[in-house]
Structure formats: C-alpha cells, structure tokens
Length: 327
Image (cartoon, rainbow, N blue to C red; front, side, top):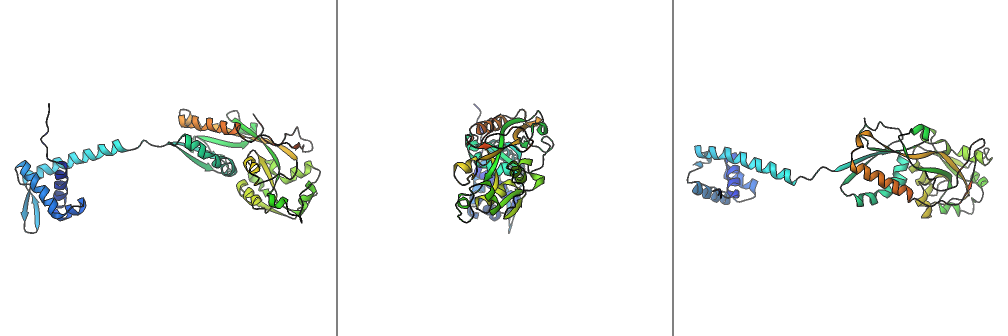
C-alpha cells in the first residue's frame, strides 16, 4: 500500500505565499493569518523536511536552493489541484431555449404563463426576444419562433397553435360610465378608440374593418390613440382610457379576471393564427422539445369559447365565434 509522506496542506500554502511575496507579513495578509502563525508553519515545514527553505536576512527573505526546488513543485501541484477542484465544482452549463415572438404575444400571453414551465424545468433558461420583425432562426441563434401570420405567410414549417377572434373590449369602469354609455356599437362615437399602427398590426386589428362589418364606417369617435405595441394598447385599455379591439385568446385571462369586458356580442374571425416554428439547429435539443410540448399544452388549456355573434366583413368569407379557434 502506497503511503505519501507529505507535509500538511496548510504548511505548503503558507510556504507558497511566503515564497511568492518573499515576506511572511504579506503572506499572512493574503491567508488571513497572523505573521507569527505563518512563521510557525514555515518552521514546522522546515523541520519536517529537515532543510532550511529561507535565508532570513535583515528585513529580507531569500529562498535557499532547497526552497527554490520546493517552490517550483508546490506551485505546480497547488495550481493543478485548484484547476481540478474548480472543474469538479463547476455546474453544467444551463440549457437554454431562445424564443422569438412579438412584444404583444410575449407580454400578454407568454410571460404570465412562463412560471409553470420554469417550475417544471428549473434547469432550462428561457430567453425571450420580442420584436415585430421576423428573424432568421438559424442565423440569429433562435430555437423557437411564435409567429402571428397567415398559413400562406408562415409556410408549411409552422405548427398552428391557435387562431384568433377580434372584438371590442374595455375596462369595467369605462363600461359603467353613465355619461358615456357602451350599450350598442354606435356608442363608440362617445369614446376614445385605441388603434395599432398599420405597420405592426394584422388587417383585422383595424377598427375600420370592424366598423365596416357593422355598416358603421362613417362613425367618428371622440378621439383616437395609436400604439406600436399591442401590450401597450391593452395597458391603456386596462386603465380605462379607451376601447380596444380585443384579440382572443391573448386577452382571455383578462376577460376571466374581469379586468376587461366585452360590451358587445359581435365578433370577427382573423385570417391570422399563431404558429410554432422550430429552427434546424434546435432539432436535437430536448429542452426545446419540452418547451414546445408545454406551449401545445397551454394552447389546448386556454379559455373556453365565449358566446358571441360572428360578423362578416362585406365580401369576406365565414367568420368565427368569439373565443379560441382550434387547429
């Protein structure tokens, strides 16, 4: 059985620091010891090895030839031990899922639901990139995109999550305002209408389309406000500052919580849906499999349809009922 006749590690650490600084005082400061404690450890090491390691001069230290030899060996050994210890302690790199989607979908639908995914997959780091422009998944390092588009626009690579239904919504406080009733669509003339900017919205997010379907294209509202992000628009609606076009199922949770209400029963089906697209580079990432499975589960468990009367935009095809549109 091999036996290593080695001095204690604390003595070797004290020697390495003293030899590097050529000072017991500076070595003591680095090791959080007293100067006398370092001196005792060096003396005990010299006694163990039966050789002097330092030449103690007036206000100076010098390594002896034996000290130089030991210093080279101790530096190499302690360095290797530090490297191996750090490698063994190092946590495995976090498994990441990079998700690209629109700010509205991220802020209203995805982010509020994310805690259930992270609770089930605590070692997976979900990184959300929210922008209205489409990114190149493989070039930009994106694992999954959730895109709001038509089937033709997204292509066959997209997996449909759910469709969308459009209808006016407002805060309950605004609905109760006796000076500005909201009992029929014509009452919208008394209110501020919240619009999405045309370059970042789908065609049926336009109030003009919805009003035309009700033959109210000449309606002039009290005022209008424009927004580049749907999440911003909904925050203003929640604050009671206007009437928005609600998009189900994005706002279904807010409807269930009665933070938003639908004053009218008329709805309009959007030609756009939400699609999952996976990058080629993420094909073998199990964490991406888990995220996509979770997304499907969330889509299937979304709010039950709410009864409404479907509208048709003049000259359009069939419209859908308010609520979730299944694939």
